[in-house]
Image (cartoon, rainbow, N blue to C red; front, side):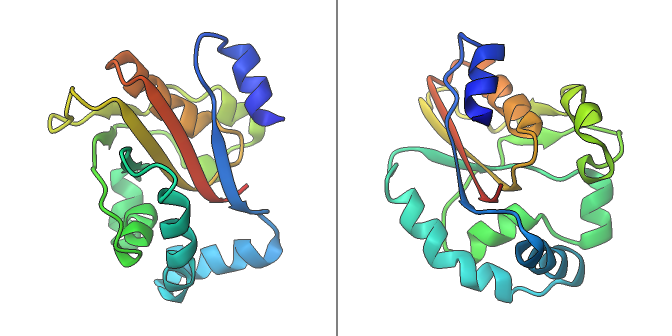
Length: 167
C-alpha cells in the first residue's frame, strides 16, 4: 500500500519496492547487533536472499544508500555496502549523502516525510545506465529511497527500483 501512496503523490514516477522480511522485534535486534556491534553473522545469513533477489535483474546496477559522514565515523562501515560485499554482489557508490540533519531513526514519521534531499550524484556516475536498483537495510516511510530515486530520475535513469531487508 505504501507504493500506492507514493505513486499517488508522484504519479509521473514508477514506484517499485520489495522487502524480504517484516521489520519485527527479532529483525530489529539482529540489525542493531549488526549495525552497532559489528556482528557480521547477519550479513552472512542474508547473502543468499540478496543474491537470489538480484538474479531477477541481471542488467541493473545496484546502488546502496549511503550513510552520513557522522554515521560512518561512528560505525566504521556502511551497513548496506557491507551486506552487498559479503554477498559478493557488485555495486556502485553513485550517491553521496550530504545531509547534516539528525538520523532518520531519530525522527518521527512526519519529520521523516519532510526531510530535505540528502543525496547528490557522485562524479563517478555513469550517465549511460538505464536501470538502477537501490538498496537500503530498512524501509520505514520510503522517504529515503524516494529521495535517492529522484536523484537518479533527474539524471535520466529510466528504471529505478529498490529493495530492503526489512519493512
